[in-house]
Length: 500
Image 1 (cartoon, rainbow, N blue to C red):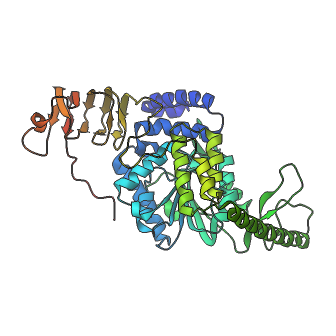
Image 2 (image 1 turned 60 degrees about the vertical axis):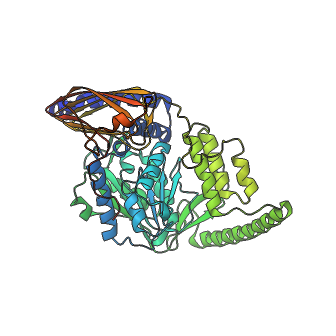
Image 3 (image 1 turned 120 degrees about the vertical axis):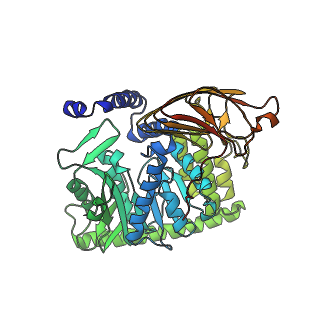
């Protein structure tokens, strides 16, 4: 570490800041999921795109396109179903959603903050009619997803931030949701030396470790050499299901009760030492028969109970709507982790409208489109600093009454057109050193400027400010630019469309 710091002294200060944040977050969040949710909340507060590892908008577009083109070249096509683990703010997901048939994209993530950003990306890309599924999770057991459903499972920059137990949890269950001829691609930070981690955020693994871990659950791992030829720092593994691999439930006597294990038709049941293949097969057939009988009996009881109670059966769309409302309530701080998990499971298994209504009884009604957004629990951040990188804020975000951004040899993009101003007067201090900082303002606000190196442009040649009412919101920009520019505009420069 000392040698690395000597070679890269400019990275010492950022690493020190990460260490301080890591120490605070680890004290507040003991398990990895809660910890990484807090990391994503901190990163997303500054930049949605930066939270998924893209320091510029151009990088965000480029990496998303890289993932999309690679999977399409490997056989992804319309008519297939895709699950993206760690979908983030749809950096690549927006391209997959546009390409696949409606309803065939499923995205999951552990961060409610980044899923809210994904919803904004979906709306900004005009992909609402594709009806993608975006779900919040707190583990990678994938228990709420159907078996044998997905042709392609994809996880980009997820395992590079995951301890080995999280990766193992995913590999233990992902085969169940894959079709027999499907595949699971994931990227990881590869090392040829000792496996290690940087703080609790970045994890480096040997290829053979992950291949062996997949093999423990009957899966085959293949190192993707053609991915290595692409301009990306992480490596990629492809996981497939060998023919004959099936997932069954076997009742075992023990404190853990019923567990899910994998079995290969030619090799017996892993984890059942001392049990012959014939005994395992007999146990398997008996268990399957018992489960089928129990399921038939349960369905009959449910039908009878629903008929007696006069309840109307709930549809999948209605269940999804309730799950979404529960996710929103969790993001708003109305539910804790336990309440979120309990209500999500209950919503996914609800049978009638009455069951769903009970889950929302103590929650406020969802805001209508265009309604007032829920009040946030935390005040908006007041600083954004970029050293040889970028600052980017856009979409719906809260702007404090005083906001400071400093950009050193980078770029700044502050879009206020859909932002929520905290007061009647908002003051920006923008410092640009060999950089350009662009502030996009809506035409309904009055702009006042002071400083040096500040320019202002309008859609028309004349200043529209005189047409505004006297009580119009005021944005006061104090700009300082050295060999750079602080620019205020009401219309962004032309940019390429996101859709193909």
